Length: 289
Image (cartoon, rainbow, N blue to C red):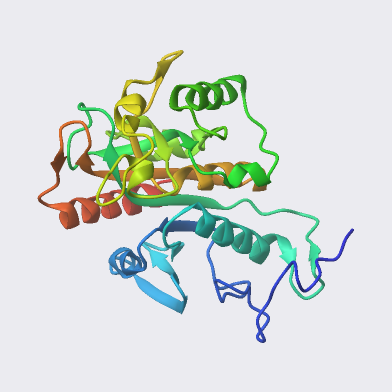
């Protein structure tokens, strides 16, 4: 068994994982992940109690209980690069002996639920509705650095989108947790989510700079193959889905639709919609089997 060297597994002076500033025992094995650090207390305001808090950079962690269920809430910041840091360090907390710098013999499976906001790619996805991501398609290049196993449907989706969009790289496609999808998504729209590496040009927005793919939104919204089509886009979900597959953890992403890129509508009650999604997820996590 290879020892993880100090330049591979970086710990601070207290022995905590470097970016998250966390030690084993400070995080529950059911974790809500959010992008915005300010959203963490908006979730934990509903907890029975918060027993632990820490923050380093954009990574804010609160651990406590909701109706007796141990939960942690952690912010990732924006983008799949941050998601990689978050998930690899979370996995290390549970599945690496940090003192011996060795993998543990028995792996622990984590359950993660991402609560996010998103823009719709279909007119039928109404403003202030909730979308649960069955599959996620990554238009970022994070998986170019990992060997990601994919089903034939997932692989063909990446190939098709590379051809359709004339991209110099192949997108990746990954399914989330079927178990969490079944348990948590009553009354939600089930769709497939596109994850982009930016907010402006990678999502078809143009301000002062010319964009290379001006038809991106139209091409993504009209894509359909084997009854697979794209519902919404944001900036993290595909990274979560791919890395959780590789690490063996369960993950589901649910998003509040705050904008519709087809109808050009934007929510007039964004904060209330996100709060409603938070409370919905908390209640369903308590009942999770």
